[in-house]
View 1 (cartoon, one colour):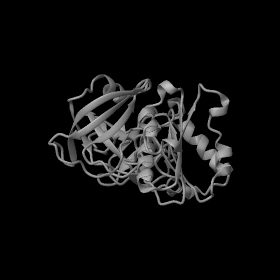
View 2: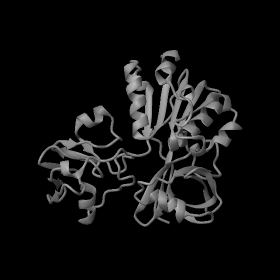
View 3: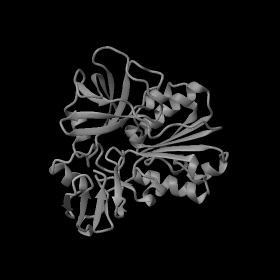
View 4: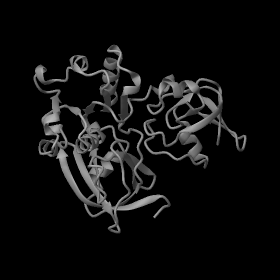
Amino acid sequence: MSAGLLQVRIERKHVEAEDICSYELVSADGAQLPPFTAGSHIDVHISTGLVRQYSLCNPPSERHRYLIGVLRDPASRGGSQAMHEAIKAGDTLQISVPKNHFPLTKAKHSLLLAGGIGVTPILAMAESLSAQGDAFEMHYCTRSPERTAFSQRIAVSRFAAQVHFHYDTGDAEQKLDLPTLLRQLDRQTHIYLCGPAGFIDHVKATAKAHDWPQDQVHLEYFGAAAAPAEAGNQAFEVQLASSGKVYVIPPDSTVLRVLSAAGVFIPASCEQGVCGTCLTRVLDGVPDHRDLYLDESEQAANDQFTPCCSRSKTATLLLDL
């Protein structure tokens, strides 16, 4: 087993909804798993060089298992397809210990908003808030009932009455009316949202239009929007501070790919600018930030960037590598 990684066995693989499977992971040696908090994710090493991040969606009080949900994505770069087609119950995998970039904070009231497979961290939050007796409500938006994962689990949960389902295919009356919802909420409410980029952008824009305090809006993307066309990219150079070596980054490649091919190791996972695993310090130059990990103030500082997807506004970036 690699240093820092856990060996787990897939105890159960279950179809939760159309194109969505859940995977129950237990320690290969029967020991308890490291504790986690609501909003945590793990890195799953699916095969050599193929690492993907999945949120834990079981109650954080559990130590005997981790539960993840995986959507079969037609635009998959190999991860979700492998999980659905190649990974089966009884298989063993290596995973990281849980990490949390999307934690709950103590609040008078919490609004949980889930879009599609973005329900996974939100579901763990609902479990945690319910166990603590904290006030919250959850709104779960999907394309249709057939594509709504964990619906039966929610139906029999202690917080079932606090969950509202909204379907793209349903009547207009049952669709999420976010402006009206925000107008009815106490201004001290903290909002937690996870889902595709379009869903998150809509919620962010609506919250901003209602002057919702920015520090009370917490979010996590589970995937990046489509990258800009390569035709609009310009070549640039990166220089490594340790060796002085300079590498040309062509329009059709990324800093991560070029440096990896040259034998320069940068830890990476999602390769979409979502997870922050590859975050690298910038000593000189101005990055062209294309990630979803850094917030606006962190991007404006221009002292770090994600080499998996971000580029450069200047001819050269000097990297702390």
